[in-house]
Length: 111
Length: 112
Image (cartoon, helix red, strand yellow):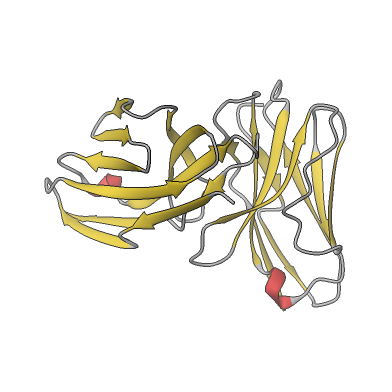
């Protein structure tokens, strides 16, 4: 059974204070690891897909990295508008189409 | 359409009543998914449709839950004899095969 654990559950940062969110996973044959952002009252918004260990992707202040056991979402010089819940999900080889999500990390960036 | 559309956005129902939730996927997206998100929890997989293949119903929590999809268009999720534990946000997503999901804004279901 695919499993995803995210840490920390909540993270408070000052504007400009860089940090990282962690996503640990166990999966049988990783097809992809996904990061989403979710704002209150809205559906998750797609950020990145990573397919193999060593892969990195960037978008504005966000950078996602992947190893064989975990993924990190690095946030550089965050702004208050980066405040949201960040969700990690995996798609395993035996569950094509289905994503297994972690519980999410609630990020709050104070001005 | 431009995005995934779900209706209604909010639904309050009495315990024991049946409810129908609707999802309009992005045109051309062959895959459609339903997830449930309870307050403060992660997304829980319910069901997955891919083209004309038999749906993956492995996440449906009980036989009170069912879903249909006509071709590659609209899907409805039906919950019969609703219970208070069914209260949650029900999210629909669509994708191209192997692509990232695009989610709708969800239907917030409250069973009183």
